[in-house]
Amino acid sequence: MAPDFSAARFKTSTFTENNGTCVEVAVASGRCAVRDTKNRAGGLVVVPARSFGALLARLKV
Image (tube, rainbow, N blue to C red):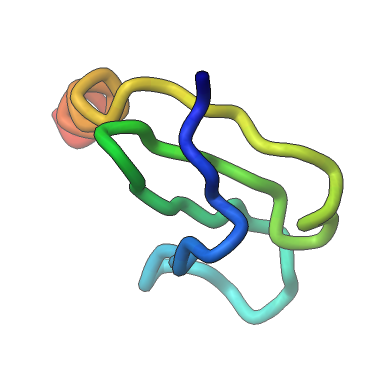
């Protein structure tokens, strides 16, 4: 069963431009949820937080 993100605090990147073309990320119960800033009700992509962290580490290289 996926964790409940209804009360999660979603954050955007500090590199986000003020035009709404970004994603937001929240972490709950070892899972990371990603959603579209412009369509917050459009659903979430939920992955293990460890996997998301590995993705971010690879992108920084």
